[in-house]
Length: 394
Image (cartoon, rainbow, N blue to C red; front, side, top):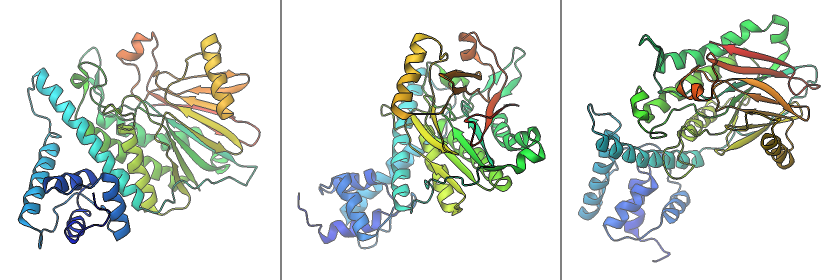
């Protein structure tokens, strides 16, 4: 393969790059016997200053007939892929399985496109900000296990959880916390740390027959989830001088073989884009897209993971928390996954298990626990890694 790009290749790249992702561009190249790797296509696009903006129709004026045919084939494939996002009625089990497989492929394409866009935008969102006022406190708000897309009905068949209820609970969180704090306490808080600890999107194909419990497909789940959390983050920012968002992925958002193909990751990517485009230096996000993340709060180091041992006093639990402490030197630890909240400690260091915005469901019943819809918040001061706890029941 030649290192030098021909005029035909450059012209094709200039037409495709703004409206096609890298995989689509490579497919067009292959149709007309031009062999370029995805890495080479991305690199050449950066060299020419051509960036991916949004899915659209390429400008085909001046392109060869072979190129036009190849582009049309790719566009038709894209249309078929997006068409499967409109769920058909009365699918057989085989059709549902095929649809899920196609949607997983589509989720990988969307994630790839989001990463491309992310690489083109100046990164301002991950700036680390250390609070200087030692008399003030930070408010840490934990969100996990929101499961946007899940429908739950009670014994009488009444719907007690769906998209609307999930969004309402996320939106109500700032207001409910304000009601729990005195005016003096509110005035003493100079930042909010939003911990997003995974399983915000319910996903698809996570367990057998999950589709029977879903209100809509996973792309719609993610869309509604992004909107709800963006509005909540903006609400916190209107009230407090600074908001920082810290994320890690859960297990329910997974959409394919790769752990990076996770709809929690897509949610965080989109929030990161929104925060960067907002251009507010006092609104930041720290995404790691992995199983854990860390955060500095008033000199204390916090660690978040979606899943951790439910007990710190058992031999297995103590070993796990000790291992993470040895690696990360955490001062407080937050996790979710088990749909009921609680507080424990390891050698005097606080460990917080967050609840679920859904409340009790079939999963929590198998664990022999029952809790209402709840998320946890707490304050951090210079002297206390966890000073006061605020369970927020909806």
